[in-house]
Picture: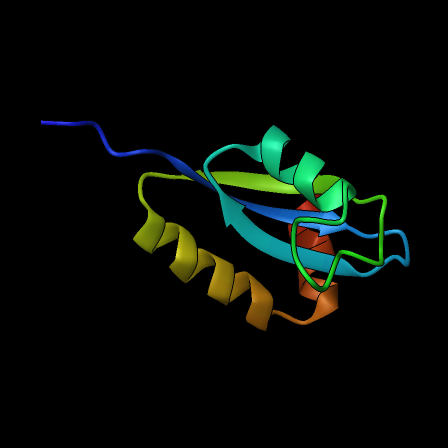
Length: 84
């Protein structure tokens, strides 16, 4: 049986000081994509971006659920999460 690919939920700090949350299986590749303007429409004109938080998940489903939870948090709670 094939091992499930681990996913990462991440938070980026954009050049305009906003936060962006996403998921990936390769964080370095994804950050590079964001910084080249190819990562997401939201970040394409807010580069450079910097990863300020990430957490590992065993599968895509749990990563998507967590991404949704983080996106629903107010900015103040995201900043607390980043600092922990």
